[in-house]
Length: 409
Ligand SMILES: Cc1cc2nc3c(=O)[nH]c(=O)nc-3n(C[C@H](O)[C@H](O)[C@H](O)COP(=O)(O)OP(=O)(O)OC[C@H]3O[C@@H](n4cnc5c(N)ncnc54)[C@H](O)[C@@H]3O)c2cc1C
Ligand code: SF4
Ligand code: SF4
Ligand code: SF4
Image 1 (cartoon, rainbow, N blue to C red):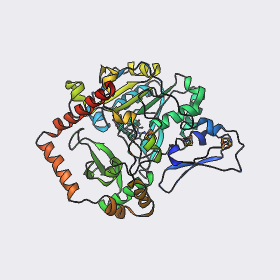
Image 2: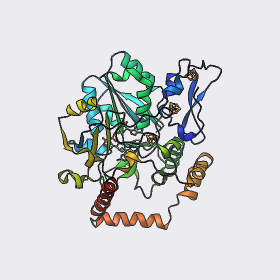
Image 3: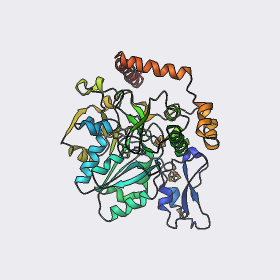
Image 4: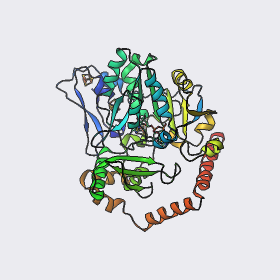
């Protein structure tokens, strides 16, 4: 039976719990709020399926293959604004639904916790738009998808690379069907659901509202280049917005303090993936295709399989999609291939997340001090003076040049 000796060796993908024939495995949160499998030894029949299905214990060798790449934008500006980058996921999922399929992705439940759910109408795809920087709870979704595929239903599953490899391993031969489409993205890491829960409740108290929605990557204030964490109330009224340098939740995430242990040595960081399509942000669109540089968001699309290519070829209406050399598309994209660095502070930070309330965590780890206020002031000043964008482009150019230098040295 599966034994997790090091917490970094489990991404919480649920494949082991889903495959167990006697339901001996349940997913339970640890003290940091991350889900891990727990085996009921009395029920276990020692079939070893859980060990064989685990995508970390049975890591797949990366195999190079032909890849096509595209820059993508939805023409519908409202939908693009709602999306994290260019709205490629909405276009792919909508096409899937038009052809009679159902789509699985990450959305909020009624308590603003992030869960995977199924959608079968184009209107409901809004629940999936915009990245949620929290590990989603997969619940029983893998088994649901297996049953749908057995019933000849078309299914599109989108998730983190570890979730995609988990479901692929769980489905085994059922994956061969053309009825399944797997979409993953470049994944920085996923933060703790417990930290998220504490943040949401802290904000509700501070803002004295029942929160209706949280958008991690809202472009309305300062565009795509400097998106904001935006909180709205139940009537859709905006109550809060802060950037990546000021909001405590985002600060912890981008300082790599709150991530799942497996994210610091991620087994799924690679260019040639098990998914059919990989999506990510195109912040350097001005360097790749000047005409698309409108600060409303662009998606990079990397096609990983023939099935992925077939679905991408179906996207024709109300979109802008420009082919681009795949090597150029991935150049400088560190998060595609490298894990986030482990910081020694993480253990102490997460211990406080487990033990303390959010205000105490902020006072100790994330105070809104002079340095933070100065950073925020400088960013906003650079935007007002219209030089933020050109500075960001110079940084992106350096990153791309460095990646080419490293490749050829
Ligand atoms: C946790 C996380 C980390 C990311 N890290 C990077 C990064 O380092 N660099 C980069 O360029 N891009 C990153 N992305 C991807 C990027 O944010 C966009 O999702 C991507 O550009 C596609 O945008 P879109 O406009 O096509 O669709 P979107 O509007 O982003 O569509 C959202 C899709 O993401 C899925 N999703 C949202 N939140 C989660 C979640 N918590 N777990 C699983 N699936 C989720 C939804 O189900 C939906 O399929 C990350 C996304 C997430 C969720
Ligand atoms: S060995 Fe088989 S029965 Fe035991 S927990 Fe694993 S899958 Fe379940
Ligand atoms: S990575 Fe997935 S399959 Fe492996 S132990 Fe964790 S939950 Fe189970
Ligand atoms: S960084 Fe790796 S382990 Fe962490 S959520 Fe992303 S794919 Fe999974």
